[in-house]
Amino acid sequence: MFNLFKKKEDSNFSFSDPANTACFTCDHVMNRQRPILLVSHEEEDGSWMFMCGKEDHTETNYKIVSLRNIVDIDNSVNALSEMPLGCGAERETVNDKWNGYTISK
Figure 1 (cartoon, rainbow, N blue to C red):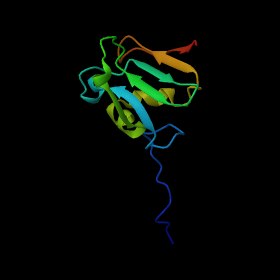
Figure 2 (cartoon, rainbow, N blue to C red):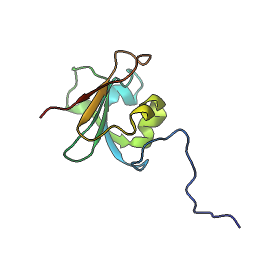
Figure 3 (cartoon, rainbow, N blue to C red):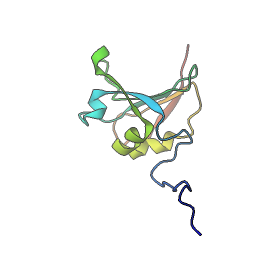
Figure 4 (cartoon, rainbow, N blue to C red):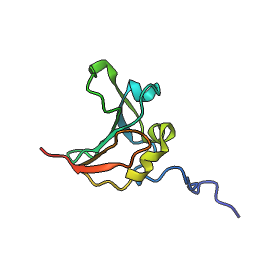
């Protein structure tokens, strides 16, 4: 007999956090105007931020979306799925490798 409630394996989603985890991003990423170039995994609350890396943001640019939305926009962020709390990663372009760093307080 098959299990209707068995969790389906999702090879396009590598995070251990649930797909519906709330994340912060900017409208530039959501509207696909700019790529994700800056990611952080905050130590205080475990939240994720997926940003375009530009500094021209105002409060109206920030959005809350699901982690699944982020992976659907750019599944290369799966490479960061095991990034520890208190760390971040950045890259110059979507074709570059992620460069990790520790978030200083």
